[in-house]
Length: 389
Image 1 (cartoon, rainbow, N blue to C red):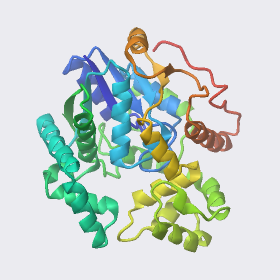
Image 2: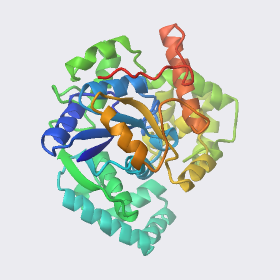
Image 3: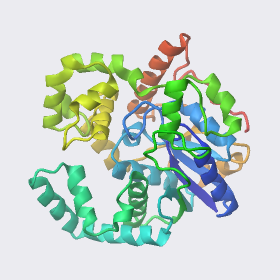
Image 4: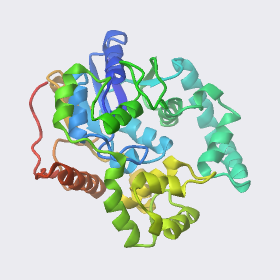
């Protein structure tokens, strides 16, 4: 059995290590393949550590291969993020089971709920209900949430982990992907916890602690050295570049997820910009969430337009398999992937890489260079690390 995991590892912590151990010790997986976000996350924020650092931490802790989710989808809504991630794992030709963590570990409930969701989509009922809610003033996200509440168990649509789980299963069901599903119940903490809760703590609390104290806790011991050597990124580190972008153009509507109303709010408030997080709070309204704004500002910063998104989606979400790293056990899978994968496996950038992925990495490198005060290789000059872990 080869288990696939979708992750951001922002940063990789003890809860993530527990998930990989569950895959190997309980599910008896021979290997674990990870689909991981790159320089920016689904929340629309810059990742706390470089993607290669986060991949390295995962490999040190039991992952065998780490592949990058394209930036266009890594920073998209839950539905599109989940769809792209599952398609990436399916495209390897070797992943037969998807493992994710959620507050409820009833895999059958997730699968049956996803099957119902696909039926509602196929017969048009879900779209009809969403349109009804939108006509009453709801945003698309809020309207879809209200429509889902009518048909799916509240427990499965009340938090991001379960919502992602439903979306993983929905994509598998809708596209008849030959992939089973396993669910690990989240341990000891809530994704919303702002403060450390012990050895198993949320990524949010770990980042908050790093920002306030400079210390990194609740992560595997064998990852501490690489974290200490890496440059930590805070959400507000993008502020100057974003501010410059916002005052040098006006056509914000063309960017992914940016409505006319939000574009107007950006234009009307740009002179009050202080920082990324402050501006998100300033733009937030009853109908526009902080996370939605954060993603839109990320798309503006990275030049991700609605046209880019639609084109990438029409091309099947994934156009290549971008390798970020592999372990000495992962080496044994490379031959199988090359034989069975439906897409090319690449270890360094070529003309096939989407320009958005290169640009996002360049933005990350620019910010990191400014903080570290030294030259950092770009995607084309950076040597792929072939050291076995």
